[in-house]
Image (cartoon, rainbow, N blue to C red; front, side):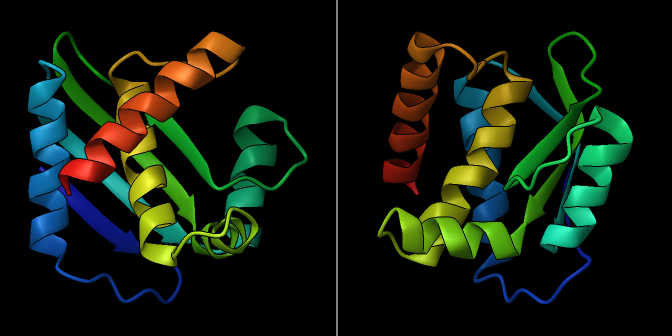
Amino acid sequence: MINFNFETTLDLEDEKRLKEWIAEAVATEEFLVGEINYVFCSDEYLHKINLQYLNHDTYTDIISFDYGVGNQLHGDIFISVDRVRENALKFEVDFKSELLRVLIHGILHFCGYKDKLENEVDAMRAKENYYISRY
């Protein structure tokens, strides 16, 4: 089950389609959807999580906590709506495109994709672009 939770104001267009799109990506990566919780929040909310759980004193657009079991994806994905808006401006894309990118980014982490090394970042971006094009 894919759940959307809101700790800030965000008007998601067509939540049903978003959930279907995420589920299709999970299936394409040969995983099963377990309990996946998205939490849309502010910069400050996510900053506190970053400090408390990761000991990082930085702002970020997304933090994912993976509780997967075997081939079934379970986890919490926190998304700063403030940071997504700012990144959309910075990268000169519309808000919806940037939101799709972070929505699928968390799922790709759950599927085993990393983004620390340059080649990992390239693979992650390619997968993000692939799934965004399928939305």
